[in-house]
Image (tube, rainbow, N blue to C red):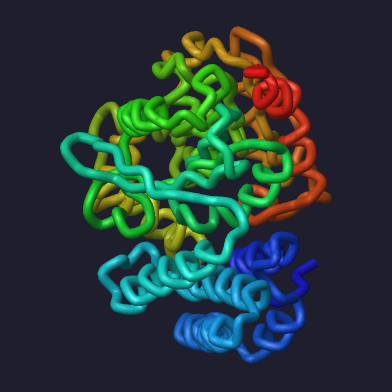
Length: 399
């Protein structure tokens, strides 16, 4: 069933945006009002209508804050942040587009205005990746500096650090976890500046080095959660960074090339023999589909690959097979059963894990849960985290 549009990607984006009503960052009435005004297939119409909705939420936030209504203002700014993200969602593969630049700026401005109204403290955290300074944010679980478990969230291609907070901020706070979010190389505003890297431990290790300087971080209780393609990135980091206490792959990944031979038979052999023209021609045909064009173009841009062949060639170094035996921490794998190829990848990863592990089915009843938020699935994830890291005991351990 397609409740909003005939195109599945458009529906997924609406469901993703709507899901944040669970975290006070979306209003179903607003969304149900704006969606029928969007002309399907018209990206300009998509962008303009979501920006219009976001602008209205921003204006409400400003007006409410001036009147001293901080709760209303906070919610309005969070909704604006969410809607601005949705507005640029199909333009991310062209990050030089002025709509994307303006969108990233408005996402950040909206979220920053909202975060000033949060009840618990937060602060920026800066760390260095290959001589480039990256920035994230720590959201604390309490106002004191008692060391507490900390959840680091890393995403994949098409999200941002602000959305990471929308997904996990409230639940982290309720369960007693500090939360760390950030934009890495090849992500968000960095997508046109730095290519995404298979050596994700080069991102996570300097981040954890900085966390070690904070007395509110319990260094023996650090969890790393990878969302979307972040499930691959997080697993790669956990294989090299031993200070990670537990890992959540949401969903599990194994090899980016797994299943890609549905577009061109014998892809691996053709990559080995550098048959670039045949590979590019096959993917050019596949990319006549708007959905495949968007997904593949975004990945190419994130990896700084000029052609599908270049992307596939880069991906030959991304399989988890040589790394998985080094993942020693307890691991939760989310199996996105609604997608057969992703489900196969999750099972391959889970079966190869050497240590303590659990696989959790997202199931068809949790459609859209790879991005966005879902109360049932998120509850199960945080129950598992709580069992692993016991935040209450950590906070009481000094008494």
